[in-house]
Image (cartoon, rainbow, N blue to C red; front, side, top):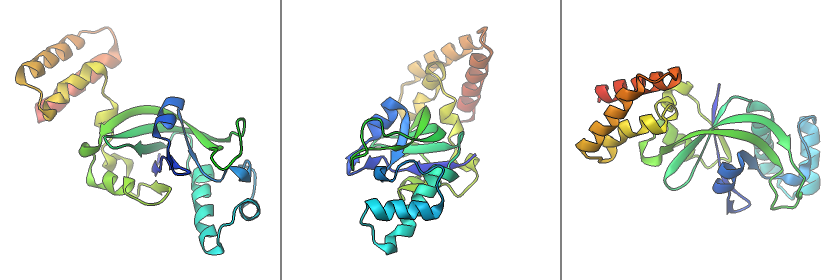
Length: 207
């Protein structure tokens, strides 16, 4: 499984809200048509035909499309962000959607995304911060996924989230109430809830 970061500003417009609400990510160059079954040379011809891109920049465009269409795989993780949060998603298959338009403002090259959770921007580690600071349209995390340290955030539920809010200045009384909720959750008939509650309590105990 790989981790990618993708810019959520497309055609000069911030598409973060649309990506989150409509459960997809996408990139530019809609007029090329569906690229999934075409060769690299055919990609170049499509781009040359529809876009006035200098030859010096063509290889970069091809590399971006190649990453989005072929290298990124179903089940990989992707990050987007706004001014406060980093959003983590599970990527689906590539598809080309020209149902609305293929105009220059359209986003036709798409992948479905199941959004798994969000992380406060201030809480990400340095390696993830470097990833989302890239100027590239799509960037690949060059380390093992575990080094992104995403799992502690993605495993949280409304029941377990409260147990870690003390790190953001929550008073001791609220923390104790949250721990009581987690202790009660340990008795739940839902095995997954019991596991997550136990994990949250152990994480709190380590702080």
